Length: 559
Image (cartoon, rainbow, N blue to C red):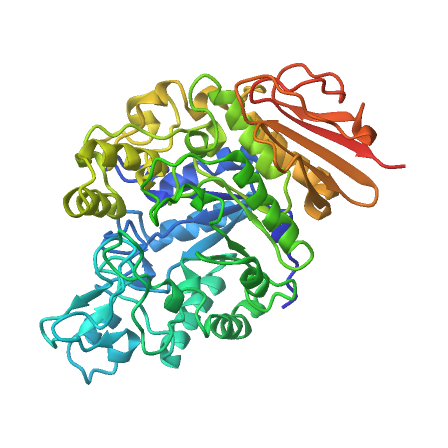
């Protein structure tokens, strides 16, 4: 089938089902709730929904531990509910891509249940089972979710590998039967009508055979599996096989979550010849908070570093591969609280972050609530945490590394994934209009001031800014195809850049401070048409100064 690359003009909206909209009052978001909000998404103007997992799951990692890839978790509804949502989305011109979680399954998946019965079971080789060494695990690898990456099975005395939770055993992609099982499942969903996949930690699926010990950094309790499991030796072979066997036969969009990816690796994953994926997520900009090998730090992001990383990916992939553009998702804290100003300049900084990202080259992703400026939440105690990563990290860092409890609470409040998982703030009623019952995780206390009802229809709202950015992307070809030129790369006050084709030119200037600043405008952009400004008045493109958190988009049609 001819692949039309429709995703280059698309804007994607990520839904975390558990926290989006609850239709039946049980406190958990569900599929009928999503269907009820499709008109809202149509009004916003998005083209694609990325649906985080709705498959059958014990919920150890909120759905990223799948026990049946062809069944819907009853908490979210039925397969009939899914089919209705898909039909209603398509009726509105909205595509849906599913989360594909195939680096690991749940330990409650039938494959693993069979696998652990005995060493001779035909499913044993679906996973990584190994003998221990002198009473210890097979190697020193640590899990992403704290602790060792191995768990001992009392029945056989062997250990199984889990790079994440011990209830998420890694699938053995070296086994061709495993790969065919996965491809068959993908065909099943695509034949049902879904429009592609977001592929969870897909860069982890190939491990170096022998599984050697990883390097141990100062202060770390376990070895780093990265050198032997990230962008592994057969990952591109596996993805090309997947493309040949499945993806190339459908007009789909695919995006790989590729932690540890480099520019050179991204050119392979998302090459313009489309032999593997449409695009990848890179994490270099979101990892600027990492200090001493952990994201649980108080490090502040330096605007110069942020600009240089974003520019590197813009120019590095130009003409070679396609970018994904995002500030936040279900694994990241709220972008206003991380990159912006969630205090006095909450509204202005939310708009500026939207402008800064959406005018770059690539496919933008909006995470639920981002379009109304949702912020990080409030944690009063560890009992407020719901995320396994935060819970495990709190205990590890306070009990094993001696970090004071108040310091760890502050760090998790800053970087914890639960910040993105509080209920979508629909209105100022009970639990932000998310549920008539008690929500599985408490709503952010600021929902009475920050909610969708207040913003939809308000031409000066953050929601309206996202609508405007989506329209500009569709109207001006330069946003899709123009070259990217970073301005003032060493400056620490503003993020400004040029987008340019043979006959069009854009200047995007974004003040990232609470002060008025001067920005040098190229001579040929003076007096340009103002396509957008997040202040009410800016009648010309002369731009003598940028006001606090001001952002502006200037346009010039070349002669």
